[in-house]
Length: 143
Image (cartoon, rainbow, N blue to C red; front, side):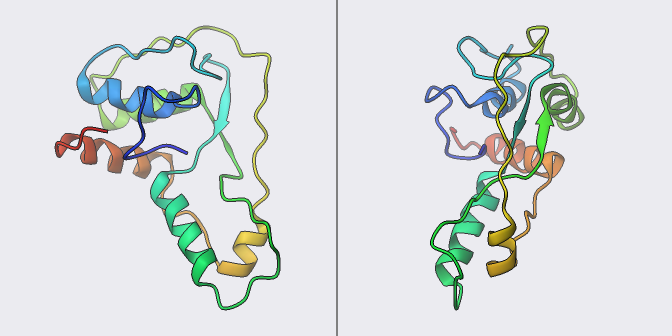
């Protein structure tokens, strides 16, 4: 999950958030101790606004068939693709990710239950999520 109102100092899962903040602030990204931040890594990403909408849909569904639902992304975004996408939104952005890949693999989530019981599909792809997040930060929002 990434997007507005996340504290980039919290947690080690914030590569997308740190990269977007670096792009908006025209600074090199701080990648020390960030999990899965190597060039060949990939991570499932869901924009925070899509996550909030999915949770709201679960809370307002007329009937749910299950007691547990995954809210997340069914696809992993390669880090180099993430960097390239940020560069499309903020062309002056520069980032050098460490070469190689981490010894870990983060699995994608199965969200079939969520789709079937609520009709949820993400509204934001990686590009539109980054574009929205950059605009939100440029509007003067601190996080």
